[in-house]
Length: 126
Image (cartoon, rainbow, N blue to C red; front, side):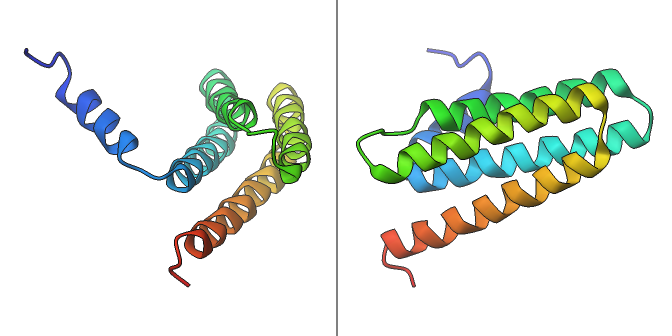
């Protein structure tokens, strides 16, 4: 069988070999990247591309929320945090509010760092 897109296939294999914690961290990294890109594009007055970048960050946050296992008490709190992020990203996207996007970018990075630490502890790498 011939692979149609070797890059896409290798990316898929890499994701499948990651732990759940590593996947969550990658998702936060992607959301962070898209928010920062949105900020830069707003500053360059490229509002259409900025809108798309922030919308991608919203999709990532939505994916994080949908993947929660609600059997754990913390999942309810995480869902509230993700809902807050999703809503505020939408508001910032419509208003092109760079200050709000910057605050959200910082929050996403804090969450990413917290999940990195939790993943290390979970895997016994502390």
